[in-house]
Image 1 (cartoon, helix red, strand yellow):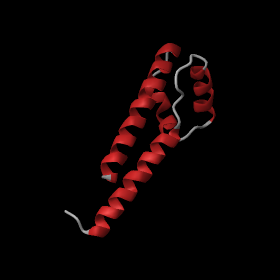
Image 2 (tube, rainbow, N blue to C red):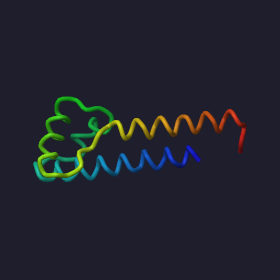
Image 3 (cartoon, rainbow, N blue to C red):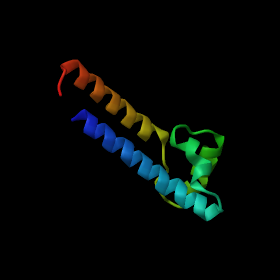
Image 4 (cartoon, one colour):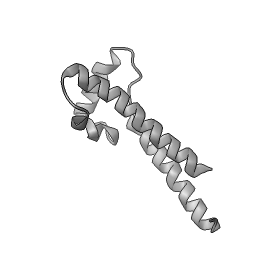
Length: 86
């Protein structure tokens, strides 16, 4: 159950990142590949872009969402392996 929830969180975070930064990159004439680091961390560039994007009223992506999903997924996998379930 935790594995599925973790996968859902990771997928949702990636979709949120792609939607937010994809739209922003398109508006600013860039590409989504330029903001791949923003998926995992919030460096100065990501923070600046998030600030600009936040002015539009869109929900600003946070890497915490992805890390939370990864943590839940990892816990689910560990618990699954400890139980020895198929």
